[in-house]
Length: 55
Image 1: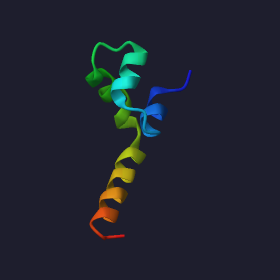
Image 2 (image 1 turned 90 degrees about the vertical axis):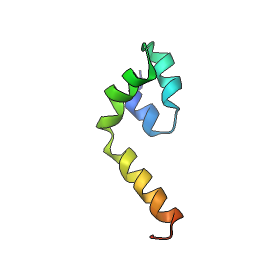
Image 3 (image 1 turned 180 degrees about the vertical axis):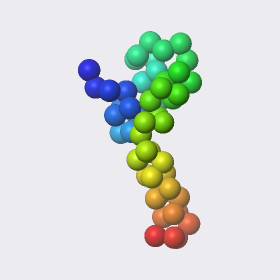
């Protein structure tokens, strides 16, 4: 089975991942997996920088 954090990192909506895993809420999924994926934050920062012309 593919780890949930890889799915979230690769753009699968957290709601979909949560439902596939049978979590009681999307918050359980986000609390469990997204804090492990530092690159999510790095990617978001890079996208914002590109949008506002800082890259």
